[in-house]
Length: 215
Image (cartoon, rainbow, N blue to C red; front, side, top):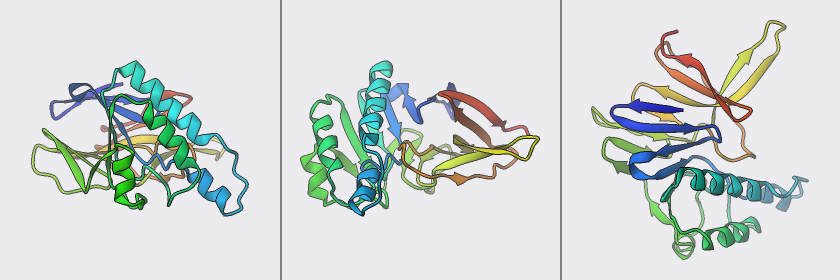
């Protein structure tokens, strides 16, 4: 799904990513890689393989969009070093694209680790023309547009028989867009869109306009 916001060409992907054609850049928020390994390390029986599937999703999107850069909007990893890090490092060795990270609150690894992994890190935000990328929402100037993650937005839909469904979503409100959490093993925060907000939910690998800014 393609959008143009403040003259910025933005492509929403149904696999919880954003592609910026002008920069050949793939945006990913809140991957929380190795979260399942973190829980297994603490004795909770979580099935293995999540990180392999999430990395394969990135590979597929990168190839399809012909991306040259991948920028993680914070919380690339969930915690301190665990066995899942070696899987990521092996994947990184085979990547020919630039991989960058804007630090999030979960990015607590030693800074040298990121350098050794050939990951370019940004302390708070990254500005690309009118676009400001960050982990959490940040102040922007008139004419700028902020894209961030952190809150793991989901939208709750209700049926006639009082059933409900929570779906991850892209949430556009004023001069900002919140990306859904990319990681397969993450929770979500139910949002409450305002009248002029736009919400695009993800269901069965399809994007659905739930709130079009006129409701």
